[in-house]
Length: 167
Image (cartoon, rainbow, N blue to C red):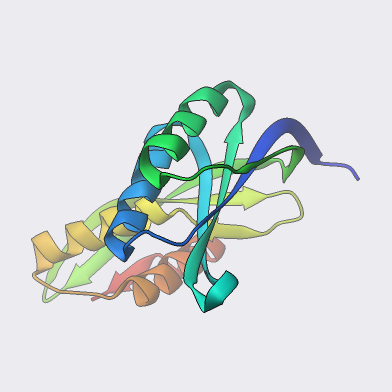
């Protein structure tokens, strides 16, 4: 398929049934610090009806040692699955647009970013929405929820007429 790229990657699958929720959350951050590209944790039930977690850790091959050291140190598990795989992805580009925020007679400009994929799909970048949320709260004293702001940024990326945000 045109526009689809591949790179060699690793996927780790680790089952644990002895960690607290706090430990799971801390482990996720440490896997990212070790070089993981993505970390997913799914609740499960294991033998003897024990609650457990399944970790799915995606990383580039060059980060394998650091990720495995984190598995041993943080998850305290006796074993894991290491699957060599191809990471398939679409070509994308970062798109930046300026939006005008209007609030109680004041207006100011802020850049927001999205990722455009081959075929025309686009989505706001999480960090861009979070930064905009912080700016709006600091400058306009308005608290906005992430989903509402995400939808406004999506509209601004798709249509220049939607680039004035009234908050």
